Length: 207
Image (cartoon, rainbow, N blue to C red; front, side, top):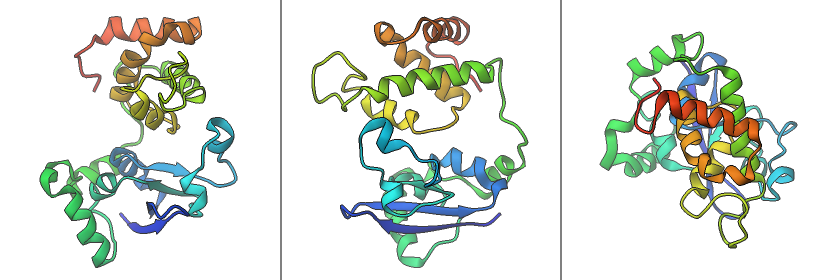
């Protein structure tokens, strides 16, 4: 396993953590909460009319996150310079159990396919499209216009919307979240939402 993390800064002075890795390590980075970014395929600004931090930092065909605590999850399995390692450790020192261990990383790397637990890829895609549809009209809950997410869901909703794949638990959590937005979503999305909630409920773990 070879994962190397570096810190870059966008035009607003905000940090972006970029991971270079082999394809086989992609599930480790997904588990940590990183997103894959390719500049020639990025449509974030077009879709949300918002600045893309990854493009601003020239993140191309690499994994990235703007969150220090997510980068810190890779402290035990990634290479980085000493200053960055110290910075990230400070961000996670009160929650060290969230770090991915070498054993966990090896297990994730060896997985050849995600576990389905009865959730189909079509269902994952439908829920993700529902989340992205809400995010596309959401202003971060700044205005009470009945569009997009409310203030409680905005952060998590936009986080999910930037992904190209949802895990089992993310799919269930997203379904529970977006069911309250039925008036804004297509009937096909709500059919899948209802099915997932009936099968997995509000508390059951999908994995």
